[in-house]
Image (cartoon, rainbow, N blue to C red; front, side, top):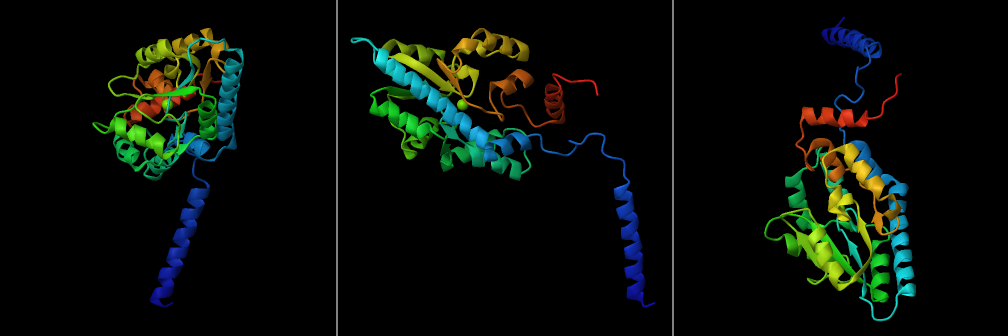
Length: 277
Ligand SMILES: [Mg+2]
């Protein structure tokens, strides 16, 4: 047998041994080992028609609230208004999350986020622009209240992001950007002195009331349960399975570092309710 043929045969036998070893290898004890814990949530945001339908549902409810308020409003009252969050409520950062997955990140990455924001690649949430234009057409003011921090340009970047998408009321009287705190209550109270807020829109409970800003998962759920009649009515909530204060309730911080300890905490959170198999 020529030298090359010997090499080929030994390689072939070696490949067979490897293949049979792989076929009969013990299955991994943890099928998630080595996987990216963010993948499923991001895949849902990127592909699910249901994700988009939930935005239509939210904005349809908000429009009904506005319509009813216009019909029942007496004369001489305060002007009507809607108070809304921006990110993941009116604006979707979908390709940021896709880039995170593509680069192997499995936790929110603040540095990548801060570099990404000035690119202005947020897209309008399904139904957002129609709802905002409906408000404008009916003379109902919209106040945008967001908390972001991209340094000295934070405010201008936020204003530019809503101007580029053609949102009405994209001006300094209607946009508040909270940099030092995520507590929106002082701003909400100041706005509510001037106008009658028909409904609040947000993807985090904190967009509605600060009382929900607690670090315990069960306490947070119990506080929300006390207000259950308000959701879909005064409070219109949108879905966000990748980030927000629900993360803070698990980890003690909204943007926990990517560590094995935190990956384990996520796994324990996923087993909060767990059947015996
Ligand atoms: Mg938000």
